[in-house]
Length: 62
Image 1 (cartoon, rainbow, N blue to C red):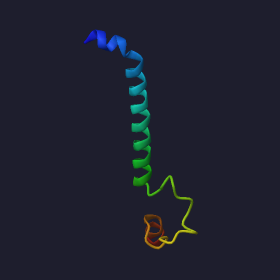
Image 2 (cartoon, rainbow, N blue to C red):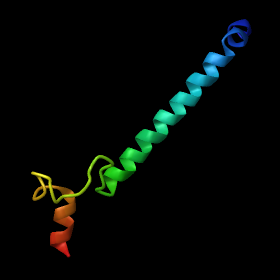
Image 3 (cartoon, rainbow, N blue to C red):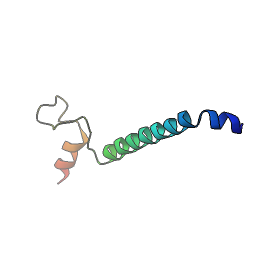
Image 4 (cartoon, helix red, strand yellow):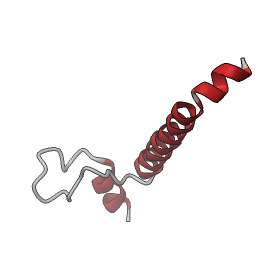
């Protein structure tokens, strides 16, 4: 087992680094979704669903 780890240490480290980056990206996207901010949205002005999204519902409450 130790021989396998020593032989593939570089691959294991790179894989762990990539996994950490992917998990951080997913965490960021989930946090943005909770705040009703999409990382892919540039605003409601040109959106066909602007009347049904969470951002417009919040503005109606205030």
